[in-house]
Image (cartoon, rainbow, N blue to C red; front, side):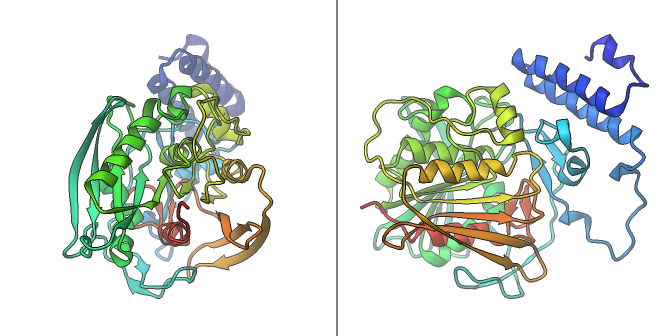
Length: 421
């Protein structure tokens, strides 16, 4: 419930009213009442839409040639799990940018998108893409892990060709409010894994650990080796390696939003376990230490400070690929740069940049950093006009942008080019 001085201020200017709501949301967040803080911001944005004659909600209905509504991208807050329309958030910039916005319903398009069987680094042909998460003959099974750090369920994709030589393993960490099935469908990673002979594990964060199923990337305890969620995820990874034919030199981790931030943590805490890391719309390890600092980092991309932890064996530059939309209204794109800079810290690298365009889709800028031997160890993809969503993902899953370059394909291509020595 809002204080009387806010609720009784119907004539307060929009920017002042929003600031007042932000102050109240800040107070609630400090008290650990994240759901209430999110609701305050939701009401602030809703009131702003009613007061602002230029609001997208009051605009004239689009004509018959306008882009389908399913093309709109919805953002999810990696701290609270709040969901908001990215286009509306872009119109409300400033204090509202990157904050925990409305907890509206997820809008999931059910149409297929164009894709195809194309080689790494090339754009897709105009072919129809299947949205099934399980290619014929493969398996997608429910599994569970229990260790000293806790218990988690996960789903494991096993390709049809499994059973001969040890295969690579990719651990995929979903974003807030998502499930393993949703993330598998949205990213299309199982389809690619079938093509290239890769196992894929999808750990699931339960509501008991975070009300909105977010990985707790912003807590100091969950940024350290052998503690909290990092220990749990490493234990889960090692279980898959014990129970299946996995090449220990080719184990990778990737994620979206809160999952992307958690992936950055895993790369810093376990360089001896993961050969490479993928971070999509996430933040660097140590970018925050609690919910309040998380909001600050998400809004402005605060520089990461690596958390203190015990000696990490196998310390090395962990090859990292970063995807981030430059219209992301939830996690500022500067965070993608911070991830890249943290991964490359202290290394002598050479950068090359190229521009590209998805046919009928989004433009992007790809920057590749190579080491002294000419090996690409850091990649950053800036997807122009994209919000807080998995680039090139399937609209049948949540938080995807089908118009962007295929992040799943590019991440897998990058991963398979690296292995632990």
